[in-house]
Length: 544
Image 1: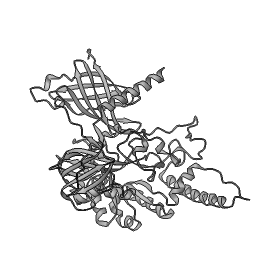
Image 2: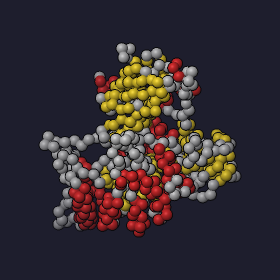
Image 3: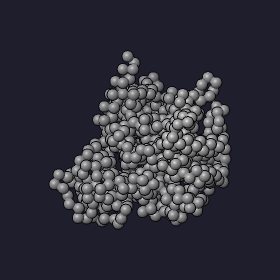
Image 4: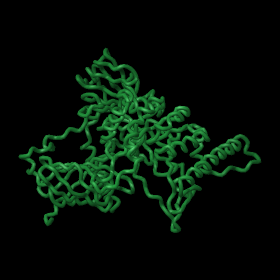
């Protein structure tokens, strides 16, 4: 019975989310009178983009408007290619802790000969969840295409390239696989490898073993008579396309030492390497250029985390240098001729992506090069530049329409097209606007609220302890799943309140944005996350 109730709850939640999702339609459109930033060529000052069947049918100053097209007058607006994020886990479940046997050892599947962190055969596509509702926060920020994968183990399986629209996995997939993800992690619980040196030793041995197994299997396939049948090894077989150079390998490396070791490994085994993160990649431009290794450059810049008070210990000199030097990496790589693209690098708020791209332009990178790093250069590194990355005839209609220069602070995104499907950006209702001083106290948001958050298929009880001061709120959110988190950016609206908070789930920080509507002592609303929206409801404790 409980199982059926959970399924019913999940179905109801999905239905509610579909009703509340921003309006999205697929059809024939003509975006007219726009400044079109093609990226692949010159800017068209007053042009038209025609979209049909998910593709760009035509683009130019004299593009003919079809009779059946919905015309979108974009006078004073700009059209850009959709943005890429080259490192996400969108659509994938949160990492699960490694399972252990009674003796403390890892418990791999029976067919694997290796501990969990070395099981390269993990198929992420089998875990990918369909449905475009989960991507609304990213689309609202202008993203249309992402690379999704994991980096919580040493060998992490093959990452995927997906568009942020479509109700099924097959509708979302642009390229599968893209690359095998490798992170320089260690095993826990006393299982080898327990050190960084051990990690590299294990990887080298497994690459050698994969090459050797490939040779044996090839020999056996040509003439099996008189030869012992090679045993199946799904982990080494999963590494064969990597050591044969059939797919790239993305290596997550930040420091000079890590990047150098990654490049040494790539050179030894002739891997098609890509560096992800690259905080100190600007110090190794000569070698990156010589080896033709691209960088997926993180825009998650280092920030001061120590308390701003007189008693706080001073930050280490290396940390201070990183804060100054990391924003200069993009310009350094560009000037050295190293191919690079931008990625979010696990930032808590995806809106910081564009803000930090602007900081990169303030540190020597031109705006056209910054735009290219999040569009066409991304598509080129992914090998999908014939389909995506620029506003050109015949390409997939992934577009962003704005009311001005995307790198200007006050610019707003008006429309986003993904696979030719139009998504309207959410507009705040008048009732949700920030109240004036005279209206600030019309809603009493203070008190202890017992709520239930309902992601699809789940129910998460939580308590909001809110203190109101004028039109601002502060306080905490507490739950058994997330612990206690501080409320940030809390504001009272004319019928409720909004706030942001960061919770930790199984070692991963998750950014949540709450919008609440109050009716007396009852409350309901929505929670926006990078994994998609959820609903919540509850009531105020009258005794507190």
